[in-house]
Length: 71
Image (cartoon, rainbow, N blue to C red):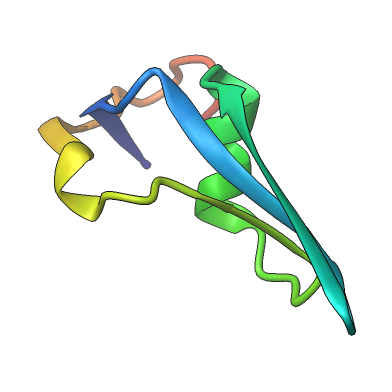
């Protein structure tokens, strides 16, 4: 497991829909929206930061054994 510290913009884009229409809206960033951006791979629902250069990895470290979230 890794612990990663990110710097991200204040908002994220959610695009949803399909077929003949797509609705896009800006949503305030929180832990859930960041997880959606990292894990959602769905043709009808996309979460993304429009400017990839605005997302920065500040640090990556090994998670100590036995800390919350590890198995």
